[in-house]
Length: 368
Image (cartoon, rainbow, N blue to C red; front, side):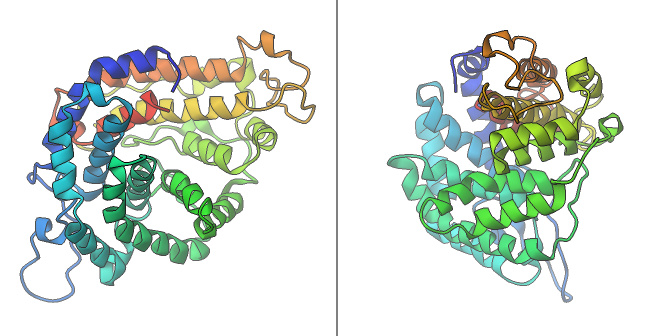
């Protein structure tokens, strides 16, 4: 991450983000388990079913907040309560607990639970731990059985998923694959490219022909993801830079004429005590996160590449690099900052309905 206002903000708020995550991952109630009853009788207690990820209101949020702890420990260790965070990670990410989690997702109704959102976040956590040179590797080893199970689940799921889910909540296909992408690249670097190939194939099947996206239909009332921007970010990971620039120009045409801010103005967050309306706080941050990623991808296009044109947005061979101050990447970064400004105040100190998960999206934007 470059030395920019995001980095300064992160250093100022890292401790309170970590303390929020610590409170959430050990808070067992309230909780919203998803239970599929297959026979009469009492339901198994959630904490027994999920001994690693029982907190934070739901399973995927618990995974997200463990990622917050791990990422803060790696990136800004001097700014967080390190001993407490390490103790919690040691306790939750034990071999026994993660084997129990893997068993749940390997059999019965668990094979499809948390698909694809929770699966992707678990692989995001696995990738984070695998990037550590030493300390995180013991947690990565414990997480590996669950990560391997979920990779297998993704590989079994994608070939039969003929159509993507395009709405802006947990079932969104693009975001689930985005969260899985870094781990897929990590596996490919070690000789196993099955997941990376499957993601590449699915993304191209689902999205390569998309044009003229109706961004004015966004957002829906409980979105915390932008279907348009999640798709764009995924394609920025899958396609070579110049090919992505060309695709993006067809996908969101007219952005160079000033339409991008009109299509993606920051959203109002009316009530963070309502679990569904609280999603809108996350929408601003997930949009900002994706905008930064797309800006990075557009800036990666060589200025001399005559095939790289984004509808006149300043990413083309005809536009000198020094004249790109008003280009699409600059506009995206500015718009991302405006989105983040609206929702960053909600990350800590508010209602549990927003506090149990929002730090993950804030950290995604701040460390992109």
